[in-house]
Length: 507
Image (tube, rainbow, N blue to C red; front, side, top):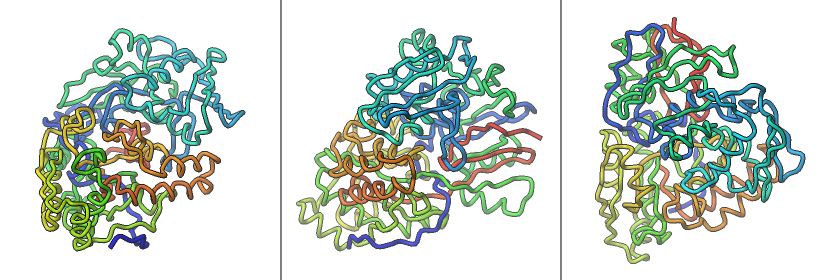
């Protein structure tokens, strides 16, 4: 039956380490190695876009952060830190004042001043932006002087600082936006630590050190090349052969092989990531909450974690794992196929059939087949529609082609952002456009304070209403594994599991 039983989840990494998560495809392979000054990084998937407000994949960030500095930064534990903004103040709960560092410039030499910030934030709020929901509280951006902007808010929003550490806070040259007719994917001009050299879609992204980066003391390798290698075994082989310096999304089986071998370093860190099935809750097949609950109850998450993740993960019933301060550890979908059948019969959906999009890589297809079989056991027929990773994401979120997508949610810097992005009525990720009952009221309570302890009860209530509505189907919180070649030093991950590569050096 469906309960709110406390689960004992191991406090482990929150990242995808098998190939069964968001956009783990993108065909092609990298060609790293052979350059002593270049850091070659094997990534599971290409960026969906190099325009921060137009991209649709959570995996984009690892290639966006080098190009685009954010207004606010964060440390490894997701605590806000100065970025392009050297200080901030909140003189009123409905205002946030930001003071920029002196002498900031974009890669094209144009000034990064208060007017540029205003232009960026208005663009992020505008038509066609995938992050407008993050700035929903902002009613106006006021330029106070060349280095100071004030965000005027319709209501208090405690998540706004960390919003500005994400896509909405990635500053793009307004001149580049104008030259590119509003889409800088092919002309990504930011103010990040590195600037673009070449992007060969589906193959690699190469960036070089930006000499006028605001933090001249930061350790930065002269060049980074992100090599797209969809298959995790091929990524591991490429690392072992010396072609890569870093391999993201290292598979558990490959990790076991390097245990005790000093020449390859294995980094295992927490991360806010959940593998899931997205539901279009307005689709004919999935609009009934009883159907969505039945699909959740028909999934044996414990078995999936042990078989598909080799035990390196935790079953998921909510957005956040127990280790996170905003989590509600009292919620769990028990595996109950009998109850699932009863709910389907009650909903008149005993012969339910629907199509599910997914990435075409081996790991994701394997996960799809596991779900397909478990749902078949309760009388549900699911037709799998595998596509190349970015195509699958766009088919679901942009074209609304099918009622479900097997993918992942890669986390956001603030828990309110996560709930808004996934379930807000107007969010890009909520393809049905249906609000989760009670969610807005629960989240409103999280804006009364900037302190985590005061905000946590509101997020726990929000998790509860999402759970009751079965707004999505969480599967697992996978552990994160990143492998480093001998000689790579200074690497630091963060709770998002999206490293920025500042501080990294090659021995």
